[in-house]
Image (cartoon, rainbow, N blue to C red; front, side):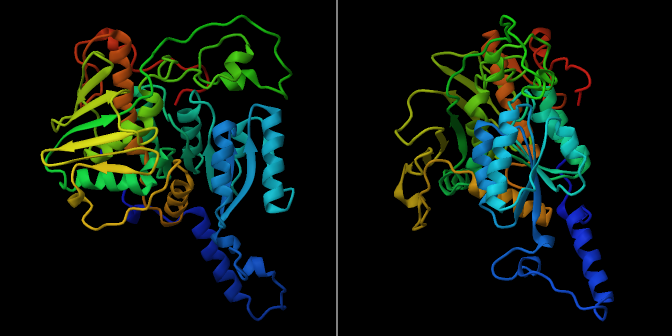
Length: 435
């Protein structure tokens, strides 16, 4: 796949166009009747002028989305103006929080996210639905011209990963996957050492998946369906295969995660850790080509460059959750969510001060997204990087599910001479939710 279009090729976005038009109009009418304009409208007193604000709507703001929302609301140039959710309690709860923050009652609520996307006054969307909806909602948002911050995992399978990247490239919108560790100093430093040759020739990268269990979608007994205004069950299912209402599905975080493989498997933390490994290995535009069967709690994959990816849960230093380790001919580094790291040699630090931030906050990642919305430059966790990191995770899940080695063609992203594995590349989606 070609690289995403350069920022210089992107036309001004809607906000930039309106801002320029407004400036021209004000200049032309400067001798007209005097107007009294509020300080906030002019951007005085620390306020952000409306022309510099980014209007945001939320789609599916539940547990993780509530945290993300807080990170957005921290930013002075964000105006959150709408939320769409299939649950009435979440719609009203988010509206209350947003209205209290902005000291108004302007946050509109929708049950159908397509009504939110139809609004021309919304610049960007935060998508924090369950994983079943991520890619489908993102592609709808892109076609509506909205920039997108989308929680992980972003896709359900290999085919959907390719569709996501292609849609973002074709529409020219800004897309940021919710893999916030790309914008934390210690992870950035570790990847920099690997990318710049400070560890010597890189030969192995290690990622923690937080489990490798995979299973196919199941079926639960039917329960009484709530009123549609309380819970829109059909919209919740969306592109997934139909099944009768059961509250356990409604609240199940792993529902339809990854090509019908609902257990999460490598995809769960691999969305973060494998993503960091690919950044370190300069593999943001490709995926691993071969995936061995799980053995002794490990899946070993190999990139076209010859760098090996080891996916494992054990043997890590006590550096917090979501650890990664990068090994070269002359050195190594390991780090995790504690914000700390361990080096093979203190010389690798070279007097550099790396800020220690633990707890994997998303604030820096959200800021990266918002800055990219304004500059039209690509954020760190852009659609292309997310696409190939997810493909590597999906392919590793296929190897885990089948219990044998699989090989991936780097041109077609099909499994080589393997019909059984290729049946897991994608899945049929319900009407009208095909991408």
